[in-house]
Image 1 (cartoon, rainbow, N blue to C red):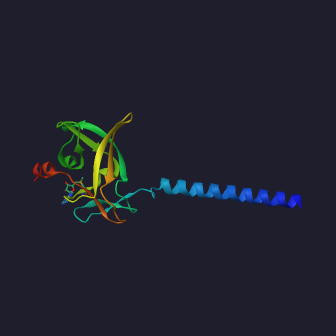
Image 2: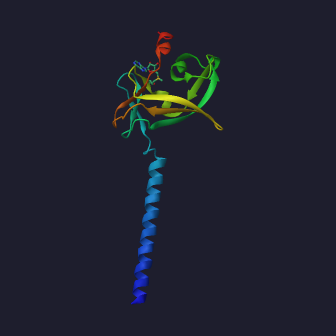
Image 3: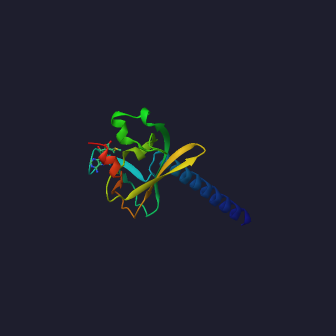
Length: 151
Ligand SMILES: C[S@@+](CC[C@H](N)C(=O)[O-])C[C@H]1O[C@@H](n2cnc3c(N)ncnc32)[C@H](O)[C@@H]1O
């Protein structure tokens, strides 16, 4: 009787361990595939490509953390100028890597951003200004200056 109990408990522990391992591997695979990302890129409602909410996003949530590189305005020209952020002074530009480069503009934005300087360099952090439904396009406000300095 005691031996049976021992066998059952051992079997339950083994099943629990294997189930935990399988769930862990599945979650790791989903993460590696970017399935848990909050942003996906697709055809924009205003211009070319745009960024969209891949999941419901709550007011204040961080939408994307983009490693960024600060360069001088001499390093950036042509069309690339339309894809970079303002840097720490008027002669600097911040190149945000990843999805952060592809957010379009709206004067009623659902996203804003700030810069964080870390030991590994600058990071551009985009966060939600309100609750955002899955599938909504994500916009930040480029600012009046951005549009008046371009045709
Ligand atoms: C940072 S990119 C955004 C991604 C771009 N839509 C793409 O397909 O690569 C900035 C460019 O997108 C376009 N854009 C962004 N917001 C827009 C808007 N509200 N209306 C029209 N064009 C917009 C402009 O051409 C701008 O130069």
